[in-house]
Amino acid sequence: MEQELFDLGAQIVQDAEKYGANHVEAYLVSRKKIIVQVEKGAVKTAEEKLDVGCAIRAIVDKKLGFSYASTRDPSDIQALIKEAVTLAKVSLPDAALHGFPMYNGSYPDPGGLYDLELSQMSMEGAIDLILRAVDACRAVLSTRKVLIGAGLNIDSTLTVITNSLGIDGAYQETLIDLSTDPTIKEENSQASSFEFQISRNLSGIDSEWIGETAAANTADLLDPKTIKGGELPVIFTPMAVEWLFGLGFAQAFNAEEVQMKRSYLSNSLHQPIATEHFQISDNALLPSGNQSRPFDAEGYPSQKTEIITKG
Image 1: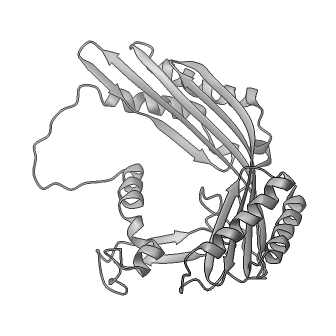
Image 2: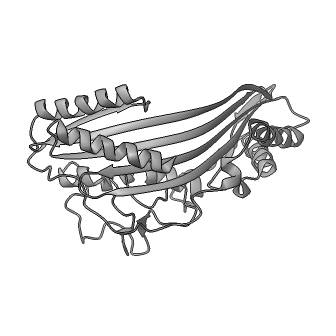
Image 3: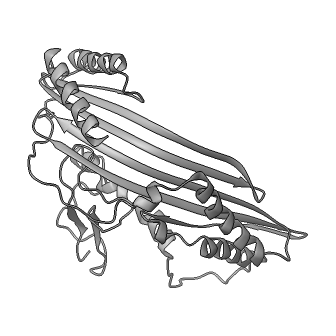
């Protein structure tokens, strides 16, 4: 499969250049998916499918065109190539567009991105995983009126990228996401919560722990108490930190936002913005990291980038 995608990418680059593109990039993905949803304690949907995708970017005289389709049919690919080049020709020029990345070396390997056992997971095995979480949740809340929902997603993906400037990269990855979300309904109180795990490997998922912890989280929310207000120390859970900084803070570090002076941190380079104990790094090479990868969406090698150091 990998060689087939490389051959297709090379053909796309060659054909797009014939149509007048100065630079061409082909991004190809093949993904096997298993999706299982549980509602009210029973399996509602169970779906297994294969997704394929082809994205093409073409540059003509500093003008960019893009096309995408979930197909690898030869006639559709030719239509995509023509669409990308045609859109590039009629787009407005961008003086800052210098082309696609150039790289012809080897890519770093974060390690632990692909689990053969997970990639070969059957639908029966997937349903067993999610129902074990549901049963564990139900056992903890056996004395209460409870509705239990759960979700399971398993992806096994092959990604290939190639461009006209020497980029040629490919990698396989797996990812599993299992969650349980019970709702307790009692006479004078109702509470909902959840728990989940995301892992590159099947061994990183503990169905019983997810179900039991989701149940405990929900039970803890019953009969809440109001505390006295004031200036108090706060300890954030890992999930709270992710939402606070990942969603509310990370966009300010987006390269385009900074370069276009749309970020409130655009003028803060080498300036203190937080306590000296605060550090953030963008590391795409963490072993088994959920977002780790050997190269980015343009085929450039991944790296560890320090975002905030000593505040």
